[in-house]
Image 1 (spheres, rainbow, N blue to C red):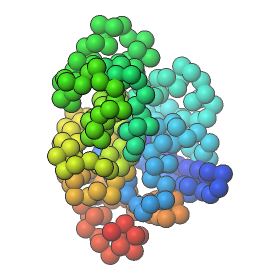
Image 2: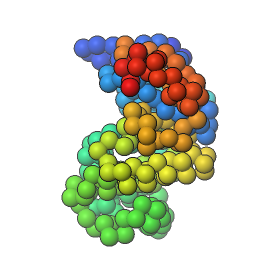
Image 3: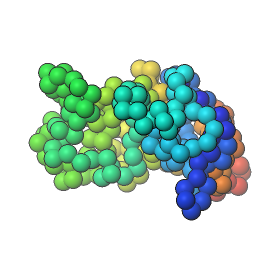
Image 4: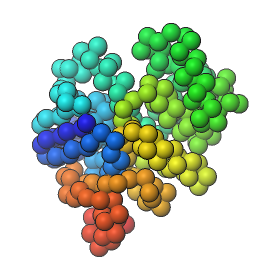
Length: 241
């Protein structure tokens, strides 16, 4: 589903990714781990089409993803319907005046009728236990509630894949367990997951595979999740544990 070959990306002040090769099959669950500043968030944004000025080759579902194609409104709309990103900071992702409108925004942008929009919103409200919050302003919610609304807004488009950027940050243990179980369920139902994380305790059992980013933005290891996490000397050397 996701294929990166020799992908590099630089911000004006410094390189972020260096010649990354990564393949993710449909239905896989992959953890992206590495120290702060290793390019994990940049990698996920690039995969989701939010960072376009890269070198190398990227394909999603067999379709080449390039800056010029992402600039095409029709192609970009179809692409962003298929893959979503849950940002580390939910406040960046929430901008509507009510929870209902937040969940309805994506489907409305895709041109769905209001009956289908209402059906999707009702389904997500039930899934995330947001029944008492539909009319509330998202900024007035707790951190855990905001994270649920943000993820529900991503799921409102029924994507094939979701990237999670440190999804457990700032959550209480109960919400972390809820989110972990939901990620397991999504993957069991065929959704492809990529997740930048360092909260290993609460994502145990979610991922079948882990890739490790070095401080200078290189992908330096790729293997079974349990095997990579068991190599504590390597993780310590990489400043991850």
